[in-house]
Image: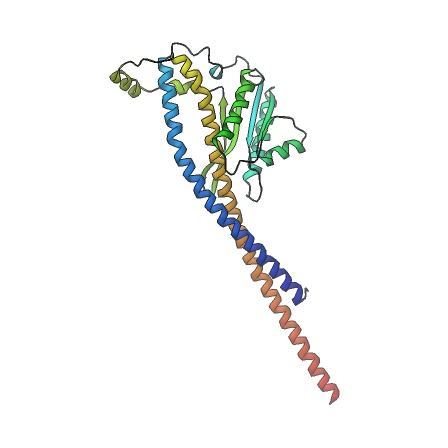
Length: 296
C-alpha cells in the first residue's frame, strides 16, 4: 500500500494537470466561438459564388475549354487531400481523418487506381512520413486559424496537379463541424468541379427571363474561367474553417473529459490517503497500548 506522502504527491500532481486541462478547455472554447463566427460569415459568400457561377454558366455557349470542368474518360490517378490538425490533445479528431484516408486509399487501389497524397496539418504529414509515403504537397502551421491565402495555396497546387494531368480526381477528407460534441468525417470531391453547379431550377430560369438578357464583358466563357479557380479556393477555405471549428470543439470536449477524470482520480486518491492515514494512526495507537502493557 502506498504511503501517505506518496499519495499526497500524486494528488498534487493530478491537481496541477487538472489546472492545465481546464485552461486548455477555456482557450478552445474561446477559439471555437471565433471559428463559428467565421463559418457563419463564410456561408453567404460561398452561396453567392455558386449563384454567380451558375448565372455565368447559363450564358456560356460552351464549357469544353475549361479544364477544371473536364471529366477524364478514364480515371487513373486520384489525389487524396487529408486535412488534419497541427496539434494533438483533441480526442479522435486527427485519428478519424487518417483512418478514413487510408480506408479510401485501399478502396481506390482495389479498383486499380493510383493514389497521390496531399497533407494539410502536421499530424497528417508525420503519418505519411512514418509510413514512407511520398506527398505531392505539404501545408502546415495554419490549421487552427486558417486564412484565405492558405486556401489559395492549397487550391493552386491541386489545380496544377489536375491541369497538368498528374491526377484525374481530387478528394478532400476533413472533419465537418456539426456541434462541439459532433464532428463528421466528410469526403468532398474537389476536382473536376461538378457540372451540376451550372444547372439551375425552373424558378431561377424564370427570374432570369424577367430580368432580361445581360451583356457580358468580357465573354461569359472568360469570366467563368476566372471564377472556377476562385470557386475551388472557396471550397477549400470553407473546409479549412469547418476543420478548425471541429478541432477546437474536439479539443474542448477532450479537455473537459480529462478534467472530469482528473477530479474522479483526485477523489479516489484522497480516499486512499485518508485510509492510509487512519491505518497509520491505528498502528501508532496499537504500539502505544502494547508499550504500556509491556511496562505494566
